[in-house]
Image (cartoon, rainbow, N blue to C red; front, side, top):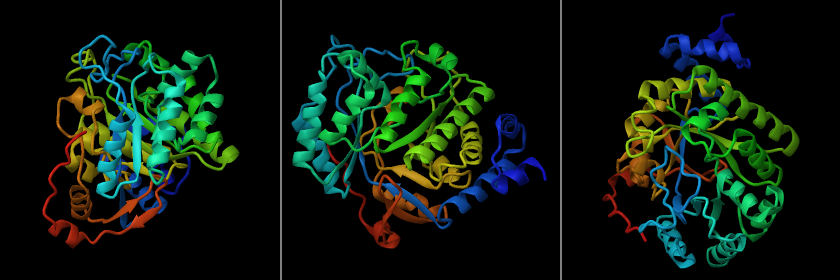
Length: 377
């Protein structure tokens, strides 16, 4: 049985076998990835989430070369949102039916740990029905350094105050050689895994991520996937839950210090890497398509290269869009439903754990007048 036949049969491929997939014709690799996607998730359905990104501060001391979002505390456009400003953004989300926020910021040394606890308590008091997935591993590492306490203590208190989960941001390529070139002060791979492992042990929601285009080798991409897979094996075995999904996108460098220094990645590279991720990550059933970096059309194609989810409305994406210099900051439910249906699938609104909440009436959604964009608080 050849390599692709074994992959299609669900056999686990190891390092050298995964590397061979980069040398095979893309349509053949894609065909296997799509076959596995159909087996591992509902073959007729593509899911999506109504949520909002909230960046509570842009002040950060890590200063990644690929980030155009961060500011120093002395810059005129540096900010920290008030609790009330964050609340108004949540109210805008709730008006369109969303009940989940993804809240991240920079590593801001001026915000004490108690500020984070008070923020969570405020949000859970005023918006108890809204789920809060917040504070990337980089931010938790910053809080460890700020307080001198370990992440288990910090995450336990944050969970008690209302934290529901941690974003998987900061993964990029989980090989320190790559990370040191792109952002010397960036969180190291071992700390990324240590913090997310602790979150999983505490029952917090997590997802795995990947960003390609730093000039990393195929071997380094495979190493990233193998480490994610190993962590998922451990989490499922020891904690009964692990990463809810895997999300991947391409590096955007237009307005960053990496412009001209990192190659980025084409749509062709993205689709191949997505297909290989579907084959490699046999223990993560849900893979997201990325419309913010490559647009809706490539995201539609991704649904035939291993993805079973169209991502989320986001409502306000600031980090990737600023780096890329484009305006793909949010999507409407109408746009997402239309693109899923046009790709030949049944759209389904989900929760963060990929439980289906409802199947929208596609004809009714498409017949609606496109909504006026919400003002950003």
